[in-house]
Length: 528
Image (cartoon, rainbow, N blue to C red):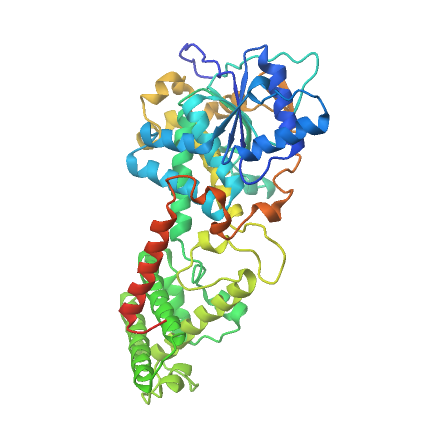
């Protein structure tokens, strides 16, 4: 391994951070937190329990004292070495002492609030909070439902990791190289990091966390903008999934549009055609009060159909498709019938019919699955709602946002360990890397450096890890699953914290919503 610069190792601060949000904490979890805090107190450790509402912790603690019959009515969490903090104190710190530029900090605050107050994506709240807390203060993070194994032999002591960062991670061949190896083909020793973010130990202001948070924000932005519909626009999907028959022009149009070199044109086309389809949907759901209003609605529909045909014609030209080369078979155009148009059907009108029909079929399928579906829905919207017709209240957005949180830290660690090979394009800056032996952060040293981050008992045993001198059983108690139906809410108005904090002003929100609806009605010229 390349010779390292001798740097004094920093000790991880003697703090255990735990996070609980969304309803009353489970008794077993609180007992485990208290046991760890009491056992580590004599070694100078302290536990901080972050929550969205202190009552969720205090109520369970009071009940626990009564049930145990200890008679110590003066017992408090503070006396047991547990400090309870509201996550909104962290949000205030993000505003007064930001990690990033003002805009990025605001984005982060909005995302935390949206997850905590609006969407109730509680696991994602915990991910965001842990990264920010550890960046500011350093220390150790453990998921609430992990169980430390405390015995008479346990000796708590702060770790002094080589790279200032430890966790439940391990190096592994990249997915592509793993595939080549599994096929018996030649492969390169290209590695990345995998694992979980359920246990972490880190020194303050570690750049891995700064980059991980930035990556989460980027992922959230993408999810908020990425459309659901026409996302996988292909001839095969249209024909097999929806059993629609495509003619030669339609196949060549879609194939050309899906070519990687035309991705900008494709994005523009999809955005425009979805806008048109959405406006048609609004008009189809507008109730006319008079024949004159109905005529006006029909005229607007015809204009929208013409604009979508024009869009296909212009896009075809940009794709160098000569329309005169194609012919269209006889078929009944649903839009011709709807608007009583007498024009001869062309490859453009036929393609327009196909695409608009396909959009509507996709929306119907999505509505059946999630109870929600409209042209401008994004991936973030798609996963918020439970499956229609079931009692399943599992938050469908969780898979997206939690993956974003976990993958972001994988990627940040991987880029950190390749820093010296990619200095010119690195997301890390030279100043923050002075704290580490960054000259060794190369592909040839990746495995050795990565192993200093891992806290597994062994390469093959991930059931137990050791942090701060304490073994931790990596078999979670499943607290996030218990009482899930009560914790996941789709009605913001029932949440007590909605009006508790100045971040979320109900009167302003309601006024804004009302004004938007009025503006929409005025714009269309109809009463909804």
